[in-house]
Length: 359
Ligand code: PEP
Ligand code: MN
Image 1 (cartoon, protein in one colour):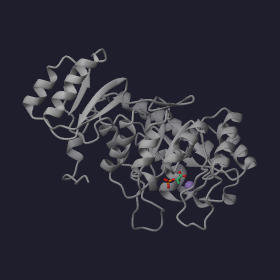
Image 2 (cartoon, protein in one colour):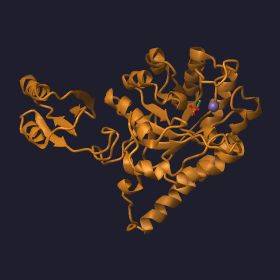
Image 3 (cartoon, rainbow, N blue to C red):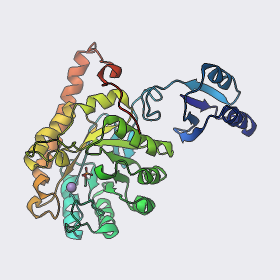
Image 4 (cartoon, protein in one colour):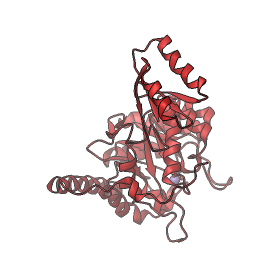
């Protein structure tokens, strides 16, 4: 249930809503989202309370939303959201390609990578400064210094930049130097971090936790949206499986499924999903065929010299091939879909397994 307030409601009229809710023992989260003031109650309202609420002058409408992720749901926001980062538009007609090294290593490396990314069809440059490494003895990234190098490299070639933020206290600082903030797989349920990036004015790329369900992922996105930041892009990056031939299992079924559940754009990272550079191009193309709004890939001028994730890092020529194929597949898909306008749309409710418990 969402209570949508009228934009022109007076303070007194709004207080009447607060009073009615508190008199009935209902705690509700006040959210400013998509230029509207909303109340999202923590518990269900009785039909009679809903009626009384809906009749208050401050209330524009009460909307029943079944999804636990209210703001991320198609029920509240049926149209697809567009998320703009520089000239790139996630969720628009063209797939967005994000490319760059796993880590920013030094000025020459990131400048070379930026030039290769811009010349090879990428619209956004990536590069990690703060790296979440499994071992404390692995290269940990160049921190803020790396992010400043990334910012400068992006500016030189005219590409916006995305980089990971790992700590809530760093969200504002990183937001000053990056056009988009990345929340990594390991931090998908770091709730203080989600709130912190939600309070910045930057678009956020939220990677899927490697052992997270779609509901957990969408509720993590909801934390960001509930802080008033409507610019969230979901990134599928593979979930943990049992086969050691690939680093993770790329869950491509989530792409069309998410398109029904949420209005948020969805991109795919075939680099971390597969762990193999030879698999990045075919699985990147497959992700576009599944309907992804873009891709994020690790690309280095000399992949074998990468200080992190060398095995899954492609070179500029492969990125060029991927960009060409991704755009051709998207164009072919749009043309094919326009020739079969009556294809049935399966309902999301039918795809859900028996309810998982939310904790
Ligand atoms: C990354 O994109 O740099 C990264 C660390 O990815 P993930 O969080 O998906 O492991
Ligand atoms: Mn990496």
